[in-house]
Amino acid sequence: MDVIKVSATSRSTSVAGAVAGVIREQGHAEVQAIGASAVNQAVKAIAIAHGYLKLDNIDIVCVPSFTEVTIDGQERTAIRISVEKR
Amino acid sequence: MDVIKVSATSRSTSVAGAVAGVIREQGHAEVQAIGASAVNQAVKAIAIAHGYLKLDNIDIVCVPSFTEVTIDGQERTAIRISVEKR
Image (tube, rainbow over all chains, first blue to last red; front, side, top):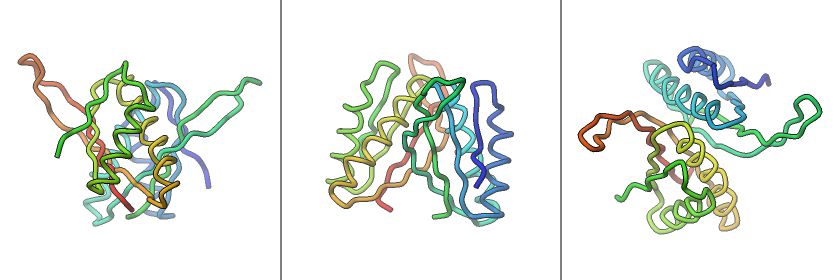
């Protein structure tokens, strides 16, 4: 499954649309963010996607976890948020 | 129900302990944060609490939403994260 990568400059409504689309198609999405601003955008996006999907009678929940990623040879701790149908 | 308020300077492990305690007692916790740093601490805390509660065979999921709060007479948009047993 592709991971939806969110940055500090991601628009939360765009990410929300992506999350809602993946949930509709696959029932499960993975969102990844590194750093406080990106995590904040990701959480806002999931809150917005929750509203979008409610209109389709789809209820989502999420589970955050830590994951290690390597960027430019450096190990960083990312937040991975698994989004799934309830 | 009391809301667990998270600030930018909250220690995520302390918040995680609070979340795990409330979940064990009541099966449901509400976490509130304003601003990117506070939201990041809240999400990290929930990820840590997920690990704590797994040891008790309790699996949690969360649902973020927006809420308006008034602080010093000013209206602010907070992120409210509902944490519940799966």
